[in-house]
Length: 309
Image (cartoon, rainbow, N blue to C red):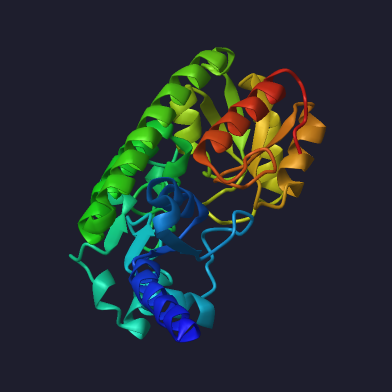
């Protein structure tokens, strides 16, 4: 009888526990920055799949069976929007037919719908239909003020989708918004020496980071978005560096640094790798706070004459 009672109690506990396990909000994040944001706001209540790692070029996403399965199971889609994922996401959504993620549904969250995007620094007047940055630069994660806004909006969306855990999402949102706001002010003070300096970048990957810190991009090594530089392009950048008093060159963690290294070795300026997104460098770690701290530290090291590979 005692064994029977234990068995019944165990079954009852399992039955009570199962709805809680099912309550997890399944999130499909197009990029690591949106994975990080979903985890900051959702905490233990979310399960997140990310389409690419921080060391993969976000312009080129491979649609795998695992990606499609995660997209089909998702309750919430968190992506950049503004056309950035158009090369792969619409077709993937059409294949999985997940009604929760359809246009106009609460399960579709595109960052570009909530914050203003910036134009690329050097190719705005050369845009063509089909350009990867046709609707503005998509790399929003570089600006903590925009991310702070997006954290607030994502918190509201998670509450709408999972009201039972509203208190969790609300508390996490409040903490995140406060933390990032405070950190942005501290880092702006720390990075004061960067204001107004000229840099060159390999790609238009840090427009928001540089805009936030008041750093001027004097040139982009790529002749067009996503087009590798040729000898003439590299020579043009090398010639420009002393004329514009360029202090350092940047490349993103996912990029092949050889074009920028060629330039810096001949121009005699530091070469700095920036995380680009959350988790892009060891010092960046899996949170926005670490990402911003590491980005600023690396830029300051470059200004002080140090290479940061």
